[in-house]
Image (cartoon, rainbow, N blue to C red; front, side, top):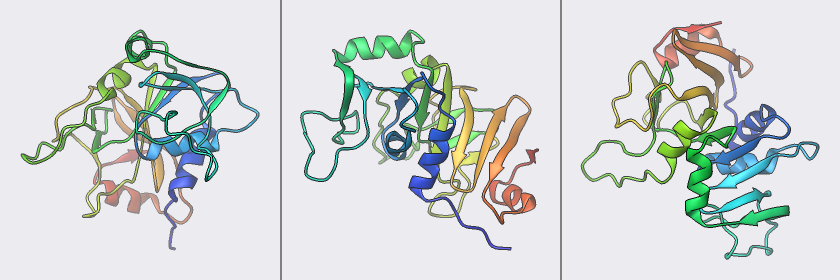
Length: 213
């Protein structure tokens, strides 16, 4: 039986599905920013950006971009009614002070027990890009990772132990990947859901680790 990987929008919608009404959320640079476009209209979710915005809305319609209104990834965004701007030092104080319910980050590697590596690959010519990841990973009440399960070379990004420099230790609660949603626990990986047609044995083969049900 064949299976279809989730597209970026399908994955973003899957993440948005788990964000509770009333949550304050930071969406990391890259793939996680798409989640803003899939938050249900019935939910009041406060989106935070480390460059000093609270109350971001979805991406603007084509032709309506205002490049003075951008997120931390320099992408144009919208501002919802009641939204606010402030100094980035205040934004980091929110992150470090435990005021964010959830952060959604990308990753190079995540260990089965929730260690996160997402700022450097350890290669000599790689450009480090820590941004606010360390503050978010430790400061948010829950850290979620959104990513493709495999690298372009077909290697699992979910590993027994991270080989890249760590962003945080045992900080990731849940991994949203293009083929499955996984919880990271002290005992290892636990399956939340997977795409139709993907056999459990095949998922474990792709990851190279046991996944409890």
